[in-house]
Length: 241
Image 1: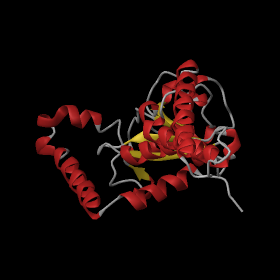
Image 2: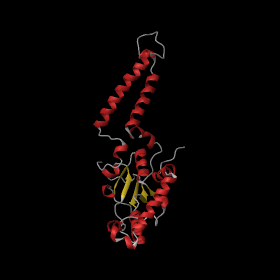
Image 3: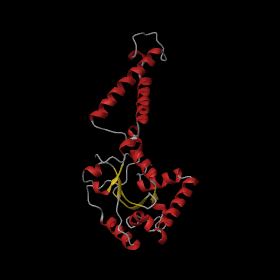
Image 4: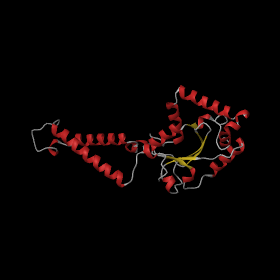
């Protein structure tokens, strides 16, 4: 019924939903400006950019369907609690297929690509995790990232929902509020008050809700700080793993 999650497909869906006509036009303008900077009569005036172009991919030469903006990658990181870090932080060895693809790009475009990025969960940057899903990107001249290779098992379908509370501070509070509401509504009135004449819907239940909410917020805050857990929105590009 529920299939596993392929992060590459999720990136493609995110781009389809997020990109407006204005974004497409803006990308085209960036491409034109980048090409203009590399014209022979402007190379000396933009020498720094020209030298950098040998380390970055030109989006006019690669498949645009595998080019993603930083905002699109960030959104996926937040949804699935992933990190987007420099490849130097990756602890395991890169698959041979990924190395071959990099060599092919270097040879085909006569470049010496640098600045590779890895999209993976935090464990992949703190210890060797061979089965963890990983995506390898190379930066482009326009500030975007080209997906070179992906490997590892796919994520379970429920990962996005299970990690919903830790996306942002707002999602954590919302989760606590809903959880406390469910608990409060499930309590029989005799466990809330000694007043046997009190109806199901009464002020006692409202007071119980707020007491439980405060308790759960305090416990959650303690557990979050005790286990050094940060929100996905703030640590998606944090090198401290």
